[in-house]
Image 1 (tube, helix red, strand yellow):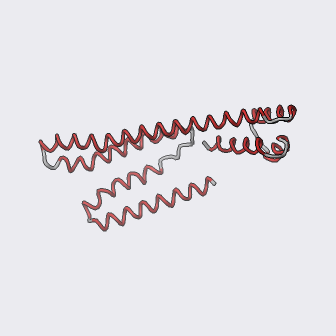
Image 2 (image 1 turned 60 degrees about the vertical axis):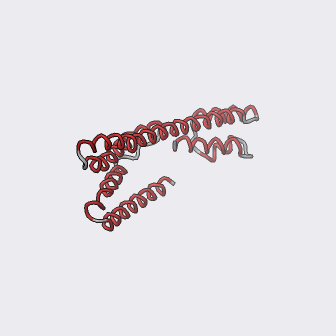
Length: 183
């Protein structure tokens, strides 16, 4: 996605700048071969039709990537909704017939299963957007957050709340550092 944004910015500058495309291309520096060819053709022709066609093509590709991302996100949330609500209710109802503590145990296992599904689908989501995969570090925060949801039951509500606050603060700070690095 970052590659598309850089290319889109270049095409917008070349297409809508009041300066000739050759001058803008020289100021930009490194541009793709097809963009350089469009700049050359538009300079010879005295128009900006080739740049406009490339810009339209790039916008359509970004739109398609966003549609794929939206589809994958919708499918992921539908799967998570099914796992965390429907599956839990069905398993807890059947399990309560055999052991009254089984729904409580399932109340902890089903969110872990949903988290595993989320973690597995995450790579698919990034692949669908053709963006670099962020690695395994976010998984650690997800696992810690899931384990900390069990902590209030075991150790008391205030201790669990403090740990959850620390984990969410760590995640917020790491995401902010990542965004600053990308800018």
